[in-house]
Image (cartoon, rainbow, N blue to C red):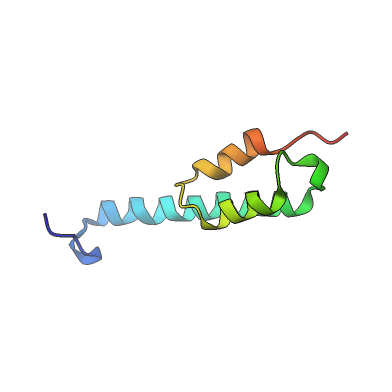
Length: 76
């Protein structure tokens, strides 16, 4: 099967890809912003490792969600 090029995709498929990419970018930005503002003691694991993973792993929004659920500790 030959690879499809962008212009070969239907307008609906292009829209889904663009919306999904924008959503993933927004989630990554929110997670990285939250991570930067937190003290080391408020993060489960290394802040550096979380930042690298959030920046470089293509996760379709899954990794930022994991960070928000499992990567943060409550202050105190």
